[in-house]
Length: 421
Image (cartoon, rainbow, N blue to C red; front, top):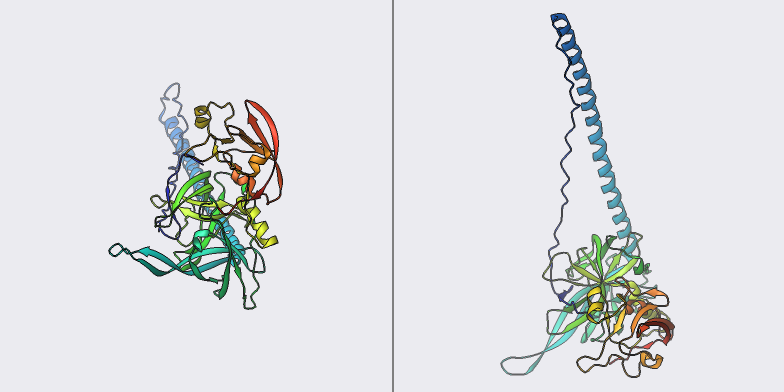
């Protein structure tokens, strides 16, 4: 849980207008003039005066020509250097787009939604169509996307490959539950029509740093296929409340924030680093802001990807604790000596901090424990408990470092599949 939650619009429901921010160059620094020295005495003879003035004129002309020539050669070089930088960045983005683009698909869905007529109190069923983006994981046609791209009530799904080929025989393999903070679903292309599919290359989101260059590829607005935008990583470990414009609100945690333009229809598409590796799945935007988008770190879904590809099932590993991600302020509020970690907070709102029958209960974790590490990886601003656990598979045993009553100890926990409810 995170106490700093804010309202976010899903990328399939709210349009944003990306703003271009131009950084103005500082004005050119004025050249400094050499200090002039006053002669000790003024010559009295006219000839000396003429000779002195002639020498000064020639010197000034030479220096002026030399300085002007230097400036005339420096500016073109500076401009050329800037052009080379811009050209290199453009070529890099172009190369990444060509490399990752074939792994990105556009998703079109048809479904039914039920609403109540406000005048007669009768339920009405309406057919809805929506669009999103997906990422090919293997040559067999398994695709990862967002849960909200293929919501409950979806009756048919089709995908469009990067070359424009539409494949209509597509099924939903699995979706995380509506109350799960991980907004993920898996699809399967059953009939590839002889097409060879290109799996995406997955990266390591734990290596990301604020300021890293990233690009997003997706089905912008549901009509502009494989749109490419670029930006940077703006922050980590964001928790937001997301809605698709209806009454359903989902709590999403441990998201990467980026200023890369992410538009409606980009949901489920990749966020890619400069090595052409997918480091996030785009999932939401701030509808009341500009250039604030969010993606699920790819490491958070490594466990479920592995279970889907190897076992054909969506198995979500979990520990079974309700925790607060510590900051300096929260650590002070709870009177804790440790400043970072997952604090297993006392029960609130009737919900127990340790879920009954969970791996945490079986391992002996207690309320007010602070989990500081998972297998020697520290929980900090860039690595949450959810993220570190998500890198593992159901059945794995992990070692948790905890602080209990001011003393450090380790506890082994065998991860289980998150129950459907």
